[in-house]
Image (cartoon, rainbow, N blue to C red; front, side, top):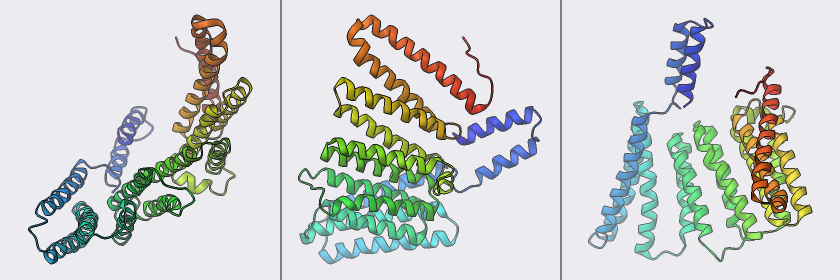
Length: 367
């Protein structure tokens, strides 16, 4: 997506005489040479590694009873070492794609080995305990080999642990396992910066978002919803305000820190809508939501497109919501459509004026 947009922009700049064609070609060539550039071949290698790992584990499991115990354990441990050894050899020869595939097969085999050996020797423990050990092993391998692919696997394993907790209906939040989830997210973020696997950071951000929403669902109270909104607002200001000490680091991380903290604030405000269903409380929360939406656009709207569109969406949606639950109940369906049309028109006008201020260009409405 980024490459296509850059190629179109470079073509336009060449036509306008702003840059020479050789310069544009050199810029595209430099982008394609980066390790982070998407490669269909490498993606297919990763998929093949996952499928081969599943095939090996299924083959071992299907013949489990026919294989002596020592042979079973030796085979699984041997496969883990072989895959990691092959990965080290591939890295030494510069074959990073094959190295990533070998590491994935080794990590997948490790998880399958824990499960199968646990069944064989009737070891105590549950799925969440196994996920913690699997996560730790994957994170260790990712750090040792500095593998972005294993950093992604580690992120998915963190989600697996979170899912195992969610499946436990008797889970209590005052227990230690609840704190393991944010710790895993921090480990994944550390691996992201160490391995330079930038796209993997979304797994950590979304995991923290899901964990906080799960916390609200477990407590279901007004203070909890307010806490989410406040945490999101503070995080957004720390990531989006140039005066913040965290602004340089957040700027280097791209649009994600400001977007996810803004989204968390909006989720908290949205949960407050469910807590306050009377007219006054609904109006107060609605006004706060619109103020938050406008603030997000003012703070980061010029440089952060996802935050800008989130602010537009929340602002327009809140206006429509307030119109439907107040005016709509008084004047009926036809009046609701009229009010909604006026609201959308007003929102369009406000957006145009705001875009005008952000871009510094005169705005005009085109029919």
